[in-house]
Amino acid sequence: MTEKSMYTKEEKKLFREIFWSSFLLENSYNYERQQALGFAIGMWPAIKRFYKNKEEQGKALIRHMQIFNTTPHVVTLITGVASAMEKEAATSPDFDLSSINSVKVSLMGPLAGIGDSFFWGTLRIIATAIAIPLCEQGSILGPLLFLLAFNIPHLLVRYYGGVWGYTLGTSVLDKATGSSLMNKVSKAATIVGLMVIGAMSASMVNMEITTQFTLGETPYLIQDFINQIMPNLLPLLYTLFMYWLLARRKRNSTFLLLVTIVFGIAGAYLGIL
Image 1 (cartoon, one colour):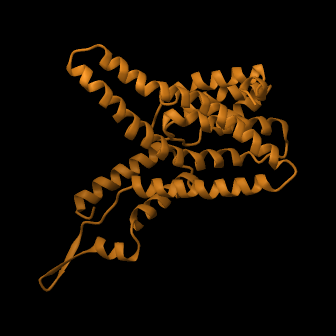
Image 2 (cartoon, helix red, strand yellow):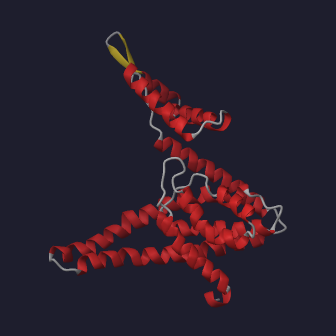
Image 3 (cartoon, rainbow, N blue to C red):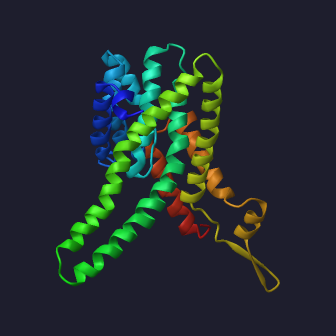
């Protein structure tokens, strides 16, 4: 079946708007929510279509302000899936809204790994290898071929990612109607999402105790004993402490940042970190 017969004129317009909006993904990148605002902007073409009043539109935008981070080149695939879910949520009062963010989080990590490997680790290298010999000869074709070799696949993936994501999301939701499939999808997405957040915490939070003691003439590093109990135990405990401050004590990100700075300075001054 061709695209012409599969999608309505309005859906094709939606795909184009998702494509262009996706270029704003990293315009407001920050360390509190990372690409969240950019992703919410990318969702606006779908939100303004599926929700008819400002209150519902505002709630949908706030829903997409949760922390988000992925490779920009593949973000439209996630936007497409989320758009299909927002369409279903707008028409079904019983739709589980939390499943939208669960699916987003479960997709952003794996797609980031694929996107980084393909675009930054493979395609960019190939494009550079094509361009460098021509650049050494002083030919203007060098930078032009680099841009073409990198951006033609990138733009195709960015556009059709939205189409594929929307189609996939719509297909899954159609099959889920009247069955328990959506509950299973939501549960699976939540599990994968928690795994992604756990992996991010383990890789991005670095904390080690540098203190050591000596028995006889043999030095013993305290961190080695902690690693034998559980590797990355300290980053885990510190992440849970931050979560407790954020969720239970209702502290904002600025307070968490100040606590981290003070803790790091104090630990370094005392010689324990």
